[in-house]
Length: 126
Image (cartoon, rainbow, N blue to C red; front, side):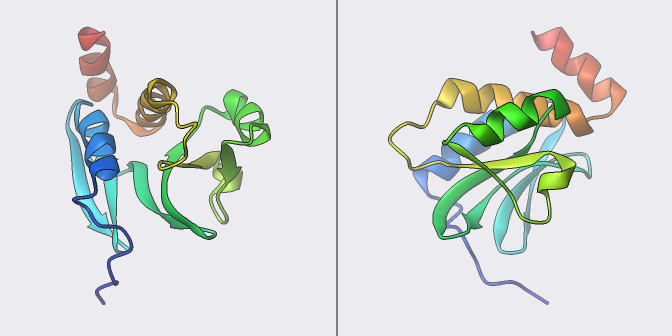
């Protein structure tokens, strides 16, 4: 069953997220549930969507130690059904969006799900 499109994949902010995500070794984009998802082989490490009345947001898997600090920051929120697995969301279109921090969170998310060879390739780039 095909899901209705939640986010325009050509939106400039989605394009910006796409560039960050696809810079990760072997990262691929797959549309799922009407939204762009970014994967390290099969596991999702980032997706863009609309959540809880937020029209354009990014969701990433956080390091468990960073998770509590992030959800206490007003820019971030726990994602229903994913919060226990240390996923957080943040608005892409907010004036306070920190793209450097988002790039770091995307990399952290990738590191949570990537294979050893993908991590080695990423480390070789750094």
